[in-house]
Length: 159
Image 1: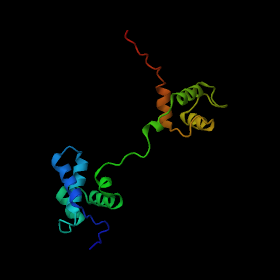
Image 2: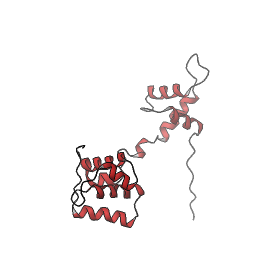
Image 3: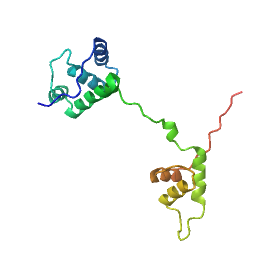
Image 4: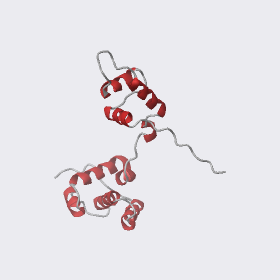
C-alpha cells in the first residue's frame, strides 16, 4: 500500500471552520469540495481512508484529492481551501496609454526597406528593439492596432 506523504491532522478550530464553510454554503462549489476533502482526510477523527475512496465518496477525481492534501501539507488550511491569489497585479500588466500611442505611431511609420507594410511580428520586434516596451505578444499588438485608443470621455459638470 502507498505511503501517505501528507497527513491531515486538523485541530478543533480548523474542523469547525471547514464545517461552517460546508453548512453555510456561501463559498464556491470548489471551496466547499476542498473543505469536504480535508474533513474526510482528517486522521484525528476518521479512520485513514484512501485517496480513491474519498474521491469516489465525494464524486471527484483522485488527482483533486491528492492536490488538496498536498496544498494542505505545503501551505496549511488556507492554501488548501481557498483559491490562490495572483502573484502579480493586473494593473502592472496593462499597457499604458503612452506606450500605446508610441506603438501606434510606429505602425504609421514607413515599413522596413524591402517591405510594403508592417507585419504584426515586425511591429512587436521593432517596439521591443526601440525600448518602447519589454515584451508584447502578436495577439496584443493585433488588438491594439485593430482597436486604437479612444480619447478619454469628457465629464459633464452639473452646475
